[in-house]
Structures are given as structure tokens and as C-alpha cells.
Length: 218
Image (cartoon, rainbow, N blue to C red; front, side):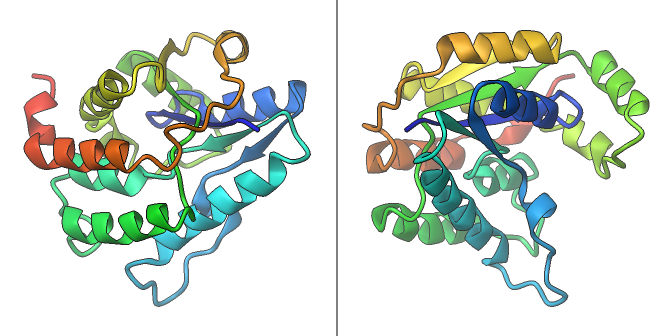
């Protein structure tokens, strides 16, 4: 069983790539949280984290009947997303708060790292063109999300330096090319790092020692 996750900026092609990949190669596509779940009127701090546990559980279940599962947006997104904005969002959820929750779930094997990450990227002008050309989605927060592109890339480069081969970086020229590159490099399902506390500790330490603002362009 193989679980991969696709990440990248808004309008880079995560969802279309994930859908095409699953449709054409006997995979199962798990979309982002907001596609499957409606946020409660009174949302508690752990609600979004719990949906990541749900997505991981579903991924494990669907792997039994499919060649692979592709998860649209990283299960560990709360770490780097909050970090990218200085932990000022969502009532200031701190790195310690997120770490404490996830560590317990990782040790209980209720969440884990994917077999491989694919980070899609394209230049900002093309992202804007794609956003304007897609009338099916509003893409709220698009401008804000442009600012996390460089910090996000450095974060995934750091993960890849610690665990070589964990992340592939793809220039998102077209969905067809994205799919081709992913199929050619998809792992067979090596689970050595799925529940790695060493990888988790590296990730949290790196986020603690580095500021996202240091990686901003300009």
C-alpha cells in the first residue's frame, strides 16, 4: 500500500493532478478537509487536527482496494502553515500546542507521514493566470497564500535533506506532465519513516529554529 501527498500553492494544480492521477491509475483521491467536512459553528482548536486523523484512517482503509492513495494537501499542514504566518492565525495556535497534539497521535499510529510528498510549483504570474481562468473556485486568501510559497519550499527541502527521497519537487507545467512524473517516481510503499519520531522531532526542531520571514523573497 502506498500513500502520497501533494502540496503547493493555490492554483498550482494540486486537486486536478490528484484527481487525474487517481482516475487513470487505480488510485483513490482524498480531497482537502473543507471538501468533505463542514466546519462546526463553534469550532474547537483541535477540530481541524482531528480531520487529518480521519483522512489518514481513510487512506489506510482505501489502500486495501486501490494501488495507492493520493492525499490532497499535507496531513501535517498545521505545522508549516501556522509557522509560515508566525503562529498568528487560528487564535495563535502555538508550535507547542500543535506538536503536543500530533506527537500523541503519531505515537498511537493514528497519523503518519506519507511514503512520498510531491511539491508542485510554478511562477507567480502563471498562478495568477490559472486563478483568473478557473471560475469554479473562489480561492479565498489567494494573495495571502502567495507569501508562504518560499517558506514552504524551504521547509520541504529541509525534510528531504533529513530523509532523502521523501519529497519530489515538480514544475507544474501541466496536469498530464505532473501525473507522468508522479507515476514514474511513486514508491512501492516503504513504511520505515511513516511513524518516525526522529523525523517528527527534526521537523518540529527545524520549525522552532527557523523563521518563515527569513525565507521571504524581496
